[in-house]
Length: 145
Image (tube, one colour):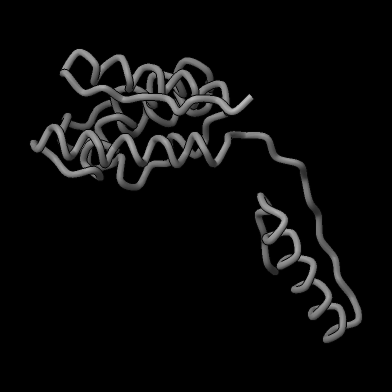
């Protein structure tokens, strides 16, 4: 069984082509799909560009280290506040860890990928404010409206 994510015309055509091949091969297809509006790829790309920028300006860590820091300091509080099940998970398993262990855990614990567009916007605003205090100017791109 395959899963797919369509976010461009090209990826739509690729999935349709793959489905046609599978149908010709087996004569049957079964599946489900849902419209997803969790977060934008632009938000995701922006956050990763920001981690790189932070690592270039604040050399105490690399971009992955700053990503883990941001997830722990800004993402975890958002999810704990908005999602009771996530709060229970975090409080039972991660809250008791040392700070260094929590940072390491951010490599494996999904945080921003669980966020809605609104939550990720809040996350980006918090990251921007945090690093502005440190002298790092993180900018949102100009909207093209």
